[in-house]
Image 1 (cartoon, helix red, strand yellow):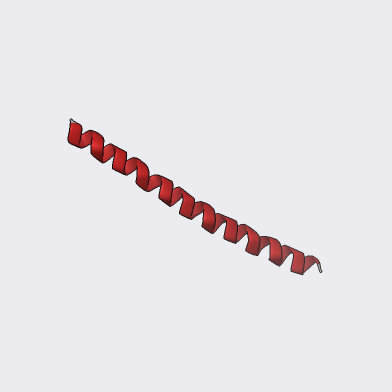
Image 2: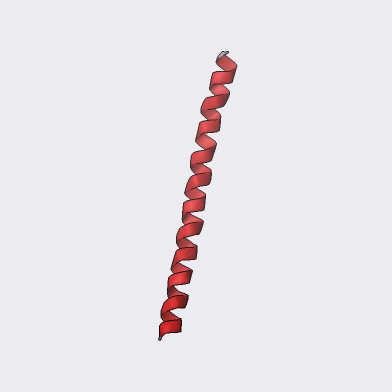
Length: 42
């Protein structure tokens, strides 16, 4: 039981890092999309 709990705690740490990475990628994509839209309008 204790081992399963420790594994669950470790698993909880991994998704947070993945989410942070996805957020960074999403932010980059949004910035690129915004720059392309602005350049298209100009």
